[in-house]
Image (tube, rainbow, N blue to C red):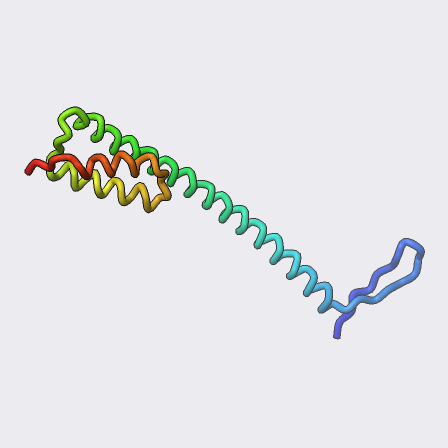
Length: 114
């Protein structure tokens, strides 16, 4: 077994097990690497949250554009209706609010033209 020897400020000597020093240094290095990794994960989660919010906003905007374009006639083409449904499902999967539920319910009552 190897020992590290040193001297205290008061002049007295001491001996320390080298394995203990190695264990502590490995532990400190591991904690440092873990904190760096945690910082990256937190930044990634924040970035994903912003991306989700942006996507949700774009989906809502497109659904409202379609809604207001056809609101007066209350008629919608088949492919536009199908696209509206896909947009709505994606919006709800991203935890979109209930405002669009009312719009969706109204669009479902419209005449669908082929």
